[in-house]
Length: 213
Image (tube, rainbow, N blue to C red):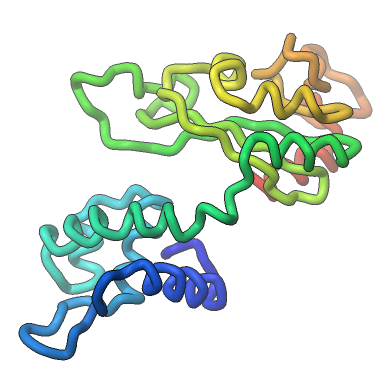
């Protein structure tokens, strides 16, 4: 649910515990309905899956207000605990400069559909969310993830409005899909070539990109 393996989850739980001013379970008074580890799993899973809070409450046999309180409390703790693992733009530039070729792709992080925020609607994905840009090497290692922009933005706009464009400029060469035509990267041909797959990209490149994103 959290997207983390057991070892990664153990490490995250330890880092978050170190941030707390007092123990999660004090051992006195009314016991909490969820363990500390479950609270971390719910928070990570909520950010990753966008499952509504009522469903999380059913899964863990608790109430929606409890889930809401946990997400509100633990989200900034998770962000702080993982900060050292998120490369800055300058660090990413140094990393991509050492690679022969890097991949760039956009993704949509889905959100609820808010009536007063139509800019979240993505015509490409037919749902609401935020557009993020991700950079990886050909081995499938994730090198950088941009700050999000509203879902109505296409990849080229998201590329320009985030630090992704500057980072890609530091790479010897880059590969993107058709959404990046005109950005100076290697992109698929508009017409079919017998040596390419249906998307116009060499098959090995498509597999590497999908494995990362």
